[in-house]
Amino acid sequence: MLKMTIDRIYVLLLCSLCLGGLKAQKLNQAYLDYIDKYADIAVTEQKKYGIPASITLAQGLLESGAGLSELAVESNNHFGIKCHDTWTGQKYYYDDDRKNECFRKYRKVEDSYEDHSQFLLRPRYESLFKLKPTDYRGWAHGLKKAGYATDPKYAEKLIKLIEDYDLHRFDVGKGKTKQEKQAVAQDNTLADDTYPKKSSGKQLTAKSSSMGTIAASFQHEVKKRNGVKYVIVSAGETFADLSVEFGIPEKRLMRYNDVAQDRHFNGGERVYLQMKKNKAGKANTTHKVRPDETMYDIAQLYGIKLKKLCALNGMPQNIPPFEGQILRLR
Image 1 (cartoon, helix red, strand yellow):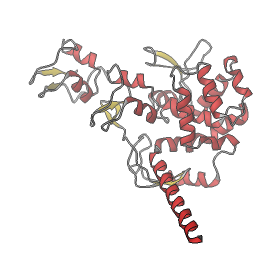
Image 2: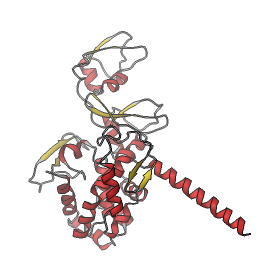
Image 3: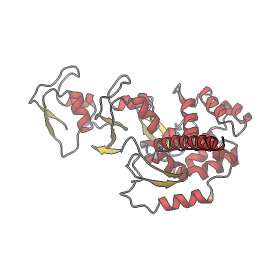
Image 4: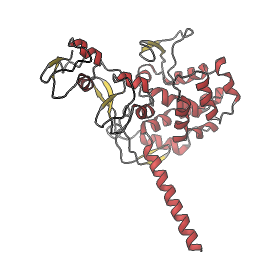
């Protein structure tokens, strides 16, 4: 009887370890690095204003694409806060829900976190502060209800990030432990070619992080074409999947890639994470059309907006090119 009990416990432990390993492999290293870097700031903001650190970190991850979005890189804006009438600081113009919208630009990321806290002190978010600082679910749904974001799944995305990355552990106000900080310091000594800081998907065998040693197996390696970031997708993936991974709204991803609705990919397609350019780089002036190649294929190949490519060649978007045709790229 005792042996049977021990065997049963062993099996349960083994299953638990396997499930834990599967979860660890799904974690995005860019997200882990972001958490390591900004968790203490989020905890400081919680102590000052009462906003759950988990909520602040999840919003930062989602709105900034783990600090890799154009808005985050160019303006240190990690929360997608627009200028509004009261903003008197520097500004950054960026295509979001509408073309050339005005966003706040900060001197450093810490300023973005502080302004995010101040932004939530507005009357429209007043009811949130009646919730317990550990009620991240209430905060997530409250932010969506108060109109912080237009995405209907905004609350669910915040909650998923918080639970997948155990961000609620920061809501007690302790910040990172000594061991976690040592892990971060160890990570920072890795060579750049082991894990580029600007990449969200470099393949690694294993790496220490604030959540322990994980077997890093990332879906996508971020590359550049014509100065625009992109990834190569696998069969069955969708824009919705990429939206969760990189924290970029689905509609924006579809706009970046000249498509009108979400769809499953066949595998091997290039999907851009930023707005494509109006023309190709200087090294690519023309393109000879291959068999069965479409204008869309060519636009994606060179990182050019489909509309601009068609205009460069005086062609309507619904007219396919012919094999052997020489197209202008700039």
